[in-house]
Image (cartoon, rainbow, N blue to C red; front, side, top):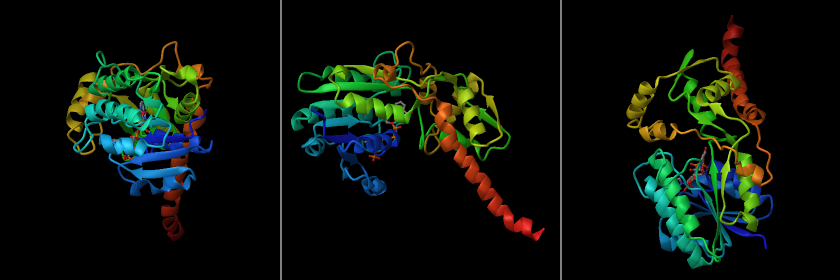
Length: 325
Ligand SMILES: NC(=O)c1ccc[n+]([C@@H]2O[C@H](COP(=O)([O-])OP(=O)(O)OC[C@H]3O[C@@H](n4cnc5c(N)ncnc54)[C@H](OP(=O)(O)O)[C@@H]3O)[C@@H](O)[C@H]2O)c1
């Protein structure tokens, strides 16, 4: 029986939006829980999406909102801790999944898809992010039984329209002339396309073979961070020389920037970058029958357009000056 009504936590984010598109196209009913419905009102243009404001960290609220759903998807994750409810790694990555499995039981939800991360490991994780992600992943699998079927996903960094990875480096480099200094240039990734990630979740949803399994998700190629950033800047039409910072300066930069509002880079991020975010011989995409999309097939469509727009805007700004000359 296909799961028809799905409750999505974290569905307003980057992966969530792509997943909602994918699942709505199949006519599934999607109840998206958010902390701020007003900020994401545009999502309701999808005819089967119901946007519900809810405090997902409150067990009673969670069980109430899950009632009537036959599957749940957890996409909540944070890269940095902040102040306020649910904003520590422990609350977002461990306590929330714990409450979610309890609420699934209470509400009779029998299927759970859980988003973790590559290298997540409760004990040996290199950073608090990766350790708490690992703990949450282990916890949801430990809670699985005949009444709750669990599948988890462990992506490398995810790229695609709206990503906060390649787009972020482009935005950071834009105001910097000529040379772009880059921390942790040798960090390694196998970037995976957001469309493939959404497809993996969508395929797993009704497939009993995926019950109890953990899927690493990677793109077809590995890159260093320096290669990725240089590629992104080139594709966006920015002529910058990417200069890799030595390790001690990268660490120093993290120690300083974690005190800047918005925490653009933290020591915990630095520690996550010390382990290669690559899959090895097992790629869950292929196991699910999905051929991984190359970065180069997609990135020019969303990074390139920015470059094109920028050039057009610059031309428009300069046009009156040219006419005066
Ligand atoms: N993007 C990547 O490259 C990548 C790589 C590996 C793993 N992942 C994992 O994939 C999942 C989705 O990633 P994403 O890039 O789509 O993240 P995202 O864009 O930041 O979206 C996450 C969503 O979770 C909700 N959320 C965030 N913090 C929360 C909190 N403290 N309490 C409750 N809800 C909170 C937010 O929804 P509201 O504001 O509407 O409540 C947000 O839209 C995460 O678990 C992430 O760790 C992502």
